[in-house]
Length: 348
Image 1 (cartoon, rainbow, N blue to C red):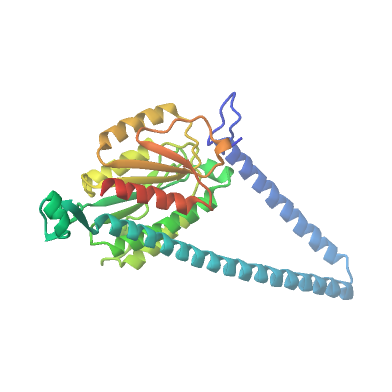
Image 2 (image 1 turned 180 degrees about the vertical axis):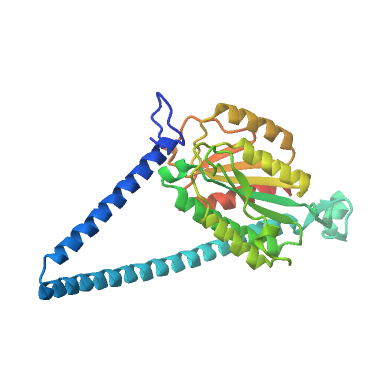
């Protein structure tokens, strides 16, 4: 059974509550007292030894500490090597995904031809034109000037941690962001805008903020380069605390709507991709989210990638204009390409 955000009476779901937090603080205090007692016992043991015994004993402790430090260093080097390999793999995966999506854009925006017309730009088949009057062809382009907005959203409620999906969700979010940023740079300026959001990260589960926003408080009086923005987004993704004791979608969708009205292009085609474990335990929140989705209306699709196994999904409704897919590290990029590719071919 998957873990939920909160503890409810007559419910099998569990979460990290204020009582749990107090229990953890008490446990840390007990550990500190035990550590102090251990140090005091160690000092008494040394006092009871002769000078030679004490030196031999301390030398054995130093040798053991050196061995432990060496082992820790080797483990750290291995972790760094694994992290470097993971980042290289993510970058390669993002490049492949970006290439696929760019090809989807190119295919949708390419010049095309119509054949067997009664009139056109050139005479393709004189015999067909003589017999049927339909031997002409012409070249045309599909719709141009289309603007696209994609919102990548990370569920930061504590159930993500307790269901052990927080690590993969961060990794997937960063890979998706890298991929879409490459697509954004390959297209004409302003054709695609990519936002990264985190939600349900405060204690009440209603916190929401745009991680791709560069604030003046970042201490710069100049424009950030795209690379600097990417580094800051990565730092914010990695440092996103997942401690919300509830998962509320309405604040996220409402903040996205507010951004669309103030800074975005409301006529743009919009795609939300929400990375979550699907623990939406508040029916009222879903109803309020329905209202927001109805207001957003227009060219909108919201896709939820649920990292829990399908058999563990709770019986929670999703808001209007939302579709939910089971995701895991092996299929998530394929799902991403499918969602974006289908969306592109639908809107262009």
